[in-house]
Length: 153
Length: 93
Image (cartoon, rainbow over the protein chains, first blue to last red):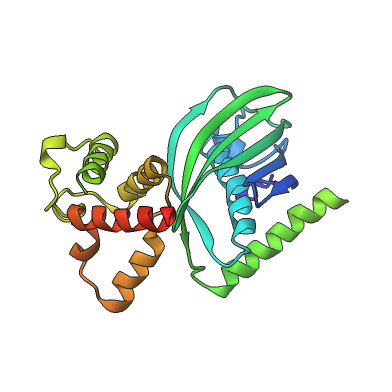
C-alpha cells in the first residue's frame, strides 16, 4: 500500500471476472505521513482508506469484466462496518463479490480480513461511465498490470 | 400494469422514504418525487431483483441525451412501468 498515492492494492491474488470475484492482498506500510495525523502516537489506517481499499478491489474486478472499456466510479457506500483497528504492518486480505450487474451500475459486497479476523465490510455501488479521458484508462491498465504481475512473480 | 406499478411504488417508498400514498402513476420520479439519479440506482437495483430483469438504464440515458427525448417518456411512473413490462415480456418471450 502507498497510502499517500491511494495505491491500496498490492497484489491481485484471485480474479474471476465472469463470476464477479476478486481477492487481493494489501500490506499496510510501517510508516506513512497519514499516520502522523491519524493518530499521533497511535497510528491506525483511517476507515475511509479501508473503504477505498474495498472499492479498488471491487473496481479492478468490474474493470476486468468490462475489459477496461468503461470506468466504475464509487457512488455509494452502504452498511459499512469497521469492526477492528488496522495498525501499521498488517497484511490484509481484500475480497470483492459482484452482487448485481446492473445497466450502467454495479453493486459489490466487499470485505477485509487479516489473519482470519474480520476487519470491515460494506456494500458498494458504482456508476459505470465512459472514461473521461484516455490517460485515466491507460493509468488503470498500467496499475492493473503492476498488481497482476506481482501475483505472477 | 397494476401489479407492476404496485411493486414499483412499494420499492420507491422503501428505498426513498416517500409515503406510498404520494406515489401515483402520473408522477415523474425525478421532478415530482424528488428522487435523484443516485437514489434511482437503488430503485433500479430493487426493480431488477424483484422482477429478475435488467432495466436498460444506460440505454435510456443515452436516448435521453442523444435524442433530446423528454424525461417524462421514461420516468413518469405509468410509463416507467410500461417499459418495465416490455422488458419482462422480452425476457419471457
